[in-house]
Length: 189
Image (cartoon, rainbow, N blue to C red; front, side, top):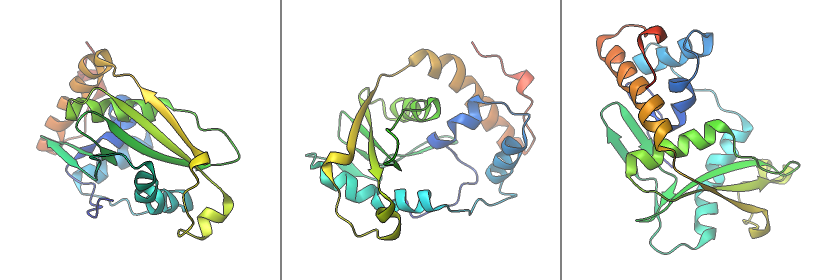
């Protein structure tokens, strides 16, 4: 778990949906204001709190030799916080309600691609854990290996090189200058 929750100045891997999404929305404007330090983002949901509480327990339950938790990589304005990794594999932890099977969303996949780009590690898994109702009320419950699912993520260099990097570079310039970005000025390669 990363202790510094300040989201200003840096763009994280979990921010990828904002970087590559529509910049003419209220949610983007609010997000960009957080990056400029104008606003803070301090809301917490039960799902967010449970995910944070169980993250290390899930990683520990995997018993992966050489696993490092909470590694942080900074490249310019990009700041990536990995949940867990070894020298050759990234493990991104996600929790979800047990009533539905976990599906890898586009934003989760893009987040992991940025983690892979920042680390140059070409192997990654989203490790999903199904939370039962009791898990939200008691963070001390043991991890049930039967509720863990593994989702391999194949790196997409085209997305990184042609879409993500041009937008990240432009947003970084705008943040440095303290100006609002104009999406029309970015040309995806």
